[in-house]
Amino acid sequence: MENKKQLVIVLTRGLDDERSSVAFSIANAAINNDMEVTLFLASSGVDWVRKKAADKIRQNPEDPTLGEMLKSFMASGCRIGVCPPCAAMRGYDADDLIEGVEIVGPTAIFDPMKTGASSLTF
Image (cartoon, rainbow, N blue to C red; front, side):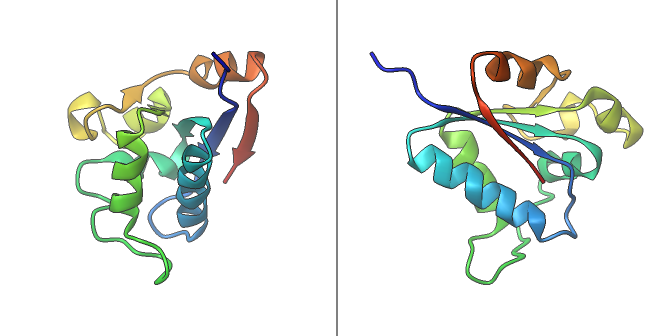
């Protein structure tokens, strides 16, 4: 069985920055091209996975809502990790986040990078 190519995306941009839309578009395109994607959210990027935060946001009128893109990403089985201090700074714990998102340290991105994953940062 062939191993999938891996991509790590670090997203530090929040609900008010259109670069977030680009990050989710690229993540979903990578998944559709048979890549395994790990998304790590830091700084204001952690706001995306707070329950209902992204449900109606559409930064680009050509894209689905960010909530729809996030659901597509989650349905693929790819991993989403949240920076622990960034979540704590905002008063978020696991109960505040959508199901399947983990509060994890940077090891979540180092492990795939050690095996050759490409990385992008937004």
